[in-house]
Image 1 (cartoon, helix red, strand yellow):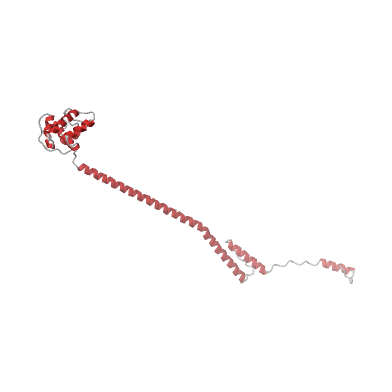
Image 2 (cartoon, helix red, strand yellow):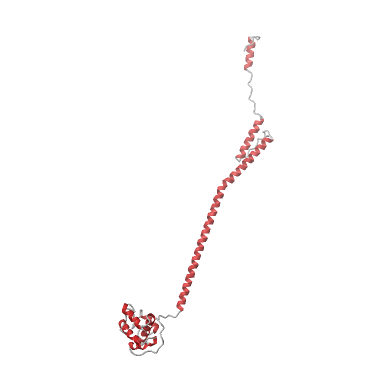
Length: 254
């Protein structure tokens, strides 16, 4: 530093004073900056769900800054609520689908139960019809006679005489005996007790022999009872003894 008008001691004194001159302290931030920072903290606190209070000794914020802070907090709350509603939407859709699936399963179970009930009812009706038919059959008089036989007095004589005497009662002439005689001669030899391993029995060889019970209870020992049954069988099956004999000759049975 140059000062042509000062002496050396004065120059030293000025230099020392210049060096000792205090430095300026940094200035404090303006109040508006502090207010803006406080508003930002309040807005951030509202977004995070925290409550931020202004310090008691802080200067009050301006009306515009406070309104902006409140509006920002309201927007954050609205966004938070919408996000919560949107996050619950997949759960609502899942619950709706679950209810629909449950309803479909219930409908399927009802349909299966209905079909089973219909099947049970149909089976019960069929069983009732079969039972009724069996009861009707049981109520009918049991008869295994091949044809109704005319009532006649008990014939007398040997089996062949009895048979020849009964021809007229069946509408045949005595000439039919010429066919009847060889027919039963081949079948049983006109024996009342003739038995065959197949179960055939008696003069006409009824199969089984119990069929002749329709002609009388003494079918096992009475020639007349057996002959009446045999003539009725021939009439209903072949029409005449000669037709039966023709079949016997052709096939070996009648």
